[in-house]
Length: 508
Image (cartoon, rainbow, N blue to C red):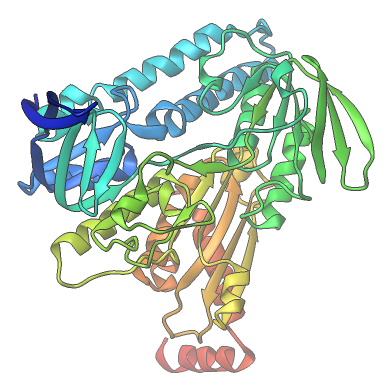
């Protein structure tokens, strides 16, 4: 506790020519300054990845979280973990209904409370090693409360001051709120509230066709909701290849999900009625029981008193360089707050970069050319590396390989012949080392199927390694070899054939 000191002041005042002694007393709290090697504000994926390693190296680390429950961050509490648990539960329900093809019939009703209980139980398993007591046993100091900068290398939490050589801001982001007339009338969900529902909405209106919106659309449709998605632009998943997103869009629509493009919410007439407006100004009425809002993310930078640490903010984003340093070089950004790609694994990438730059004289810059992401629908849509637009902008020559799954044996027996793989490979001749520059895939478990392609992309591995690999038959990843083989065959020109034929005559 801070020590309390009392002071007295003696003052003479004149009143009506008379001298008078006035005594003032006041109390000053002397705050003790606690010193650390590293302070981390935020206890999500990014902050934990940095802090955990620094603690293991023997550094004195303070981690600050607004509440004890928020330890684990958005990923554990409101993002990746509960959403993937919900997707899994919805997939189980969907697959169970699919058995009707083989003569089995099940009740169509889903108990949403049991689904939510399943999500909660999964979170609690992970929370067993992502909580205040656990991290304190691991060697962290934990402060609970709102952090505010008091100087360039100091912060205050709950009337206690802390100082460190380096400070990492990892406060994350939150869902943007929808503002529309009548919004107060409707049942409103976003990713912070949707995993606590007690009743399945019969009609669910989803605003936003990004990864979160599309994943939730399919999950709730499979659980039994009638789902309508409203998207302000002309496509779903705008950061992915349109050739593949169209395949996913078609499958979602065939399942019964209605998607309205170039459309926004005008207002809400009642708790069960939304008035939508198209780009052309045409209005339409949509019935609903609830809305799920997924229109973007807002960075958590309010209340930090960043100006006291000489940290500059422009257009609601903290100014940051390629080393993830703010305008105060001793304060670094990690995760969503860096204003970059908002993925948990991007936060982990930031964490590795920060750790390197904290302890190594060889400083590294942030480089996203190998970044990958997955939209966890069924089928999954996975993307990695550089896309066609980026390659052209950087004047990188490449070969585009498009491999469909129509005649792939595993796709035939597992019923996903609609699948497709696109690869961008550096140009070269038959014996040259060609590398995978990027690509994308749509297929069940595409996020797993592309992992060897991501490894090849990151490591600069030759496509000959994949071409020469012996795959057990009929694993699904054989499609990767088929795509590479397709390119290798394109490299066989008439002259190459003549050389091979000559070699056959001479050496066989």
